[in-house]
Length: 423
Image (cartoon, rainbow, N blue to C red):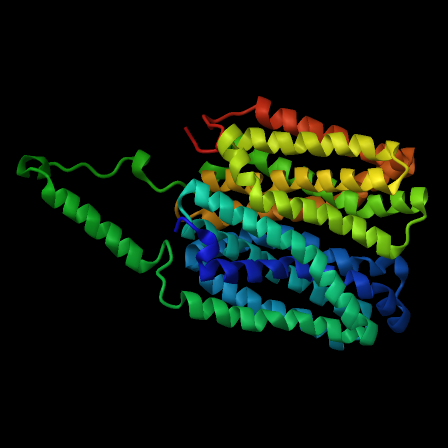
């Protein structure tokens, strides 16, 4: 599988993965109409957009464990069906609490989609270079989906905001596509694979000289399959998860506070703000699709990640000094480039740590860390805003990005090489 872009199954995984972004992206454009027509309290209505962040963070690792034990395809199909049911249900409800409950549940289903689809991806592409490119495609699609779905929801919402919830019904055809494409595949950890391993082991013993069949010792602990805690409860994996969480917090802060800065400095309207945010997304998508693999091969994944964090820090420091759109726009694109380097590189580093049978879980914890970062971002940077004002929000995010880059490349433990593989 040297050319993942020729693989039809990759496109199925990309399509299903894009639904994770859609979870909240289609609600934000119609939230004002929901507040008006349902007489919601604006102070708490925002939870309809953000509540799923917490449940994705909580359920991604749990459903990742389930995917590794019972099969990623089974978890993915079930999660897609539940995603469609819980998501569409919000369109027929009229009170805040029932709608909020559906948002929480659709977030849990999104966690299952993220965990299972990433698990299937890394199992399908075992070669590091090919897997790196496939993960870059995922990052590209997620970035573009963050642009496409809000626009689509806005167009539908202009007609009737309740019809936007019908978009969650895409989970049903996606579930059918997954079932059709993987119905004949044996997943890692299945009985068939176990039988093959047992047969191989039997053949190895049978091929030994007869004198070696006497007093055969039972397998030692060094041959036992690695347990989840053995993999993730080490310095380097925890470092990657913490980095992923804080990078997500920084990226989410730009989505929240960059529009405020554009409004304050340029008196920008919603269209201009949308175009600037889209430019950031396009920068991230372009580098993820065409540059991340080369950077990882040339510098190593950890140094490439640190490079991306350095670019983010530089741009975050620069933005508060700028007052004109022709200078702000290129900086926003470059910030997207830095983010587009960091995110797929981090997932690649995590995938290199994942032994067979634990891929879904290890990557699902990364997904959970990402959504946890988005959930805590308004609290962390909102405190800075209320304490010091808008420019220090960007400076604080820049310091955080710079420290993460230094920490990642300068403090590496547990015998891990630059590509994230255990030595």
